[in-house]
Image 1 (cartoon, rainbow, N blue to C red):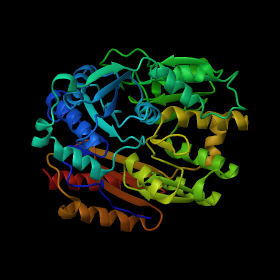
Image 2 (image 1 turned 180 degrees about the horizontal axis):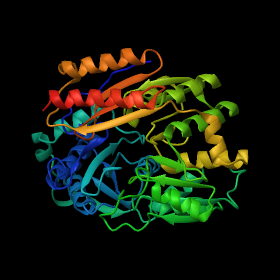
Image 3 (image 1 turned 30 degrees about the vertical axis):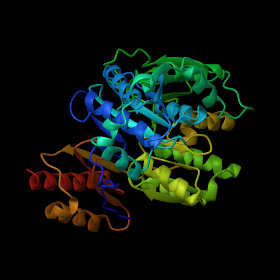
Length: 461
């Protein structure tokens, strides 16, 4: 199976990408001026020029979060909106709180797995789902719309901001409620890596309150250390701690805790694909996997597809981005999907990827099976060798206007035949070309990936 693709989405959007607006903090578009306009625009959009909207604003632990939070709140208040501040809290927590408090909009200030110097803005609707491309395009079009200036409130019409004092407790209670009530974590040793990010307080609480013996690392944010050699992107420290503590497993979250990577008792990484295979089998056996289907992106390993086929489960692939996974799930009535990177969506419990809810599903499988995680993961799927290379290039050009690169792609596909895949795409959040090649021989697929990237570099030099 071979495939060539690019990030999909509505081209009308210039600021919003596959996961909101993102960039270097205090450089366009991640400036307080833009944030103020976004706050005003989402409030006007949510109220449709009528009643005042209630807007929940959450953030991760980046230093620039203070600046952008204040600017967003000012924009909301300028339109007469009511701001509900949560402070540092996972992205999925904001999605939950928007729903539970019957708010109109949720805004998350986070650049997810990116370095601390970056930041981003994600917007959720009143149903807790990320806004579709069309809605983001509407909001973006409003940023310089004169109606926003004309709609500014004065006197008693100006909005106000307040903090939701118990936001952490609300979310911890919600997450624990997704774990089977007949299961306990007594005697289970877990290492939790919070990536010095949004879940640094709530993640250890969830597992310790369910009875586990928890060792927490990556829980001392200083505004600059989020995702720095820790968390889901850098699980090496977690693996070492798991071995040192003789823990049953390790759980690594990213900066905004919407993705999960797990480490088994031997320090080996269990990625999103393996977790999907584990959870799909459990849900299939329990009869809770809707339409016997899992939704994943084009990046998921061919081994996942083969494993699911062996279970009698269908795999539906989408463009890269958890928003596209969720859209496909909602459109067709599926309830489980995710990404290789660890964004895992259990629609029976949450509206977006939630690292803690996903971790509890893995822990539940471990407790029920009474077997080491390494055994469970090995039984779930066998990976096909996969090479992923990235390069920041001097310019960005549509793939169908890169003939030399296209020729290299076609040559790679011919060499792989029916036992591999090729995927070349531009990142939706960074100025990078990503090349993924799968096949039976790792040396061969690495050579093919490098040849494609070399041609792209020459073509865009």
